[in-house]
Image (cartoon, helix red, strand yellow):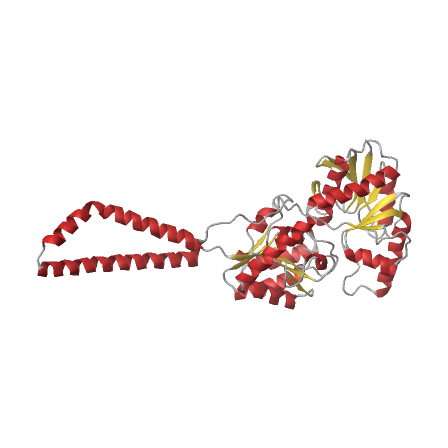
Length: 450
């Protein structure tokens, strides 16, 4: 048994000074799952991360976490300090695009290309290729979460071992993120209520049925006619009552039916497409009065984007139909179960999105930007919709699904089927194989359990 150190820029919440809480992003969830695999192999994981505030030390999820204050203009220096303090073999779990001096014999992870942002100078992108070459030269192996980094390395860098870059896509627990359990429709419930009312009405008159029939047998023609008239009036009254009940059911349907819900299960940040999503929200809520939208992701209080979002929400004319909530990893499933459409409108910097996989696994139709690893997950028109990043195409795709229930259901069915091939059990198995080889090479073979 030995210690394995993971070096990264974020794990617990160093953005909001909540150092004891794991931040709700894809990178952080990945590290949490990776620590579980390391622990399953008989070793002890620890995490070293950057801190936007002071240095800290904490323990969460049975993991020791060390935070390092740093200069934002000199990230490699902070990684040097983390590597010096790390115990045992080292895994670099982010920032491979920085000119890091890697500890010999270490493993790296690329969580998605982030140098695809619009407007980034060409010279900067050329520098990134040089820095990735440093990673290829300095690390024994790099695990990529999507196919795009692997292609980038083949196109922009050189390396001799084709197995040095290992593709292990992100994964989802398909046994936990399942479609919402079926519920009875409002129409079915109203039909049951009508039938119960009819049976109750019938029962209340059963004791008089015999007397009514007897009276009908002895009355004369005129009386019978009068009786028929009275009876006709009675039936007319029943008909009116029945019609009134049906009207009440329709009225109840109008007033009680659950609004259609769109979920944006992403961090509220520029790269995750918060601006085009806010613009699309403006148009959608104005056009569809029975629609609501939930922003179900982390928000960094005090940031420029965070302040802008808070002001937009507070002053929005349809603020009552906009919800914002930060969910724990384990609670987000309930948000998916309450939603009808999921939106992943990434502008840049995307790997194999956890949120996209979770929504797909829950059987939701997904509208995603054709950015990064999202192209690995969504086949446009088959198991979701792919659009170029931006507000106009995003809005058009949302309108399409809001208006077409059959299309939503069809896409959701195939989304669930596609998610099954990304099940977490496969991810764990592939990472176990990589780690067993890596740890054996670094002298930690003892203690590994099969």
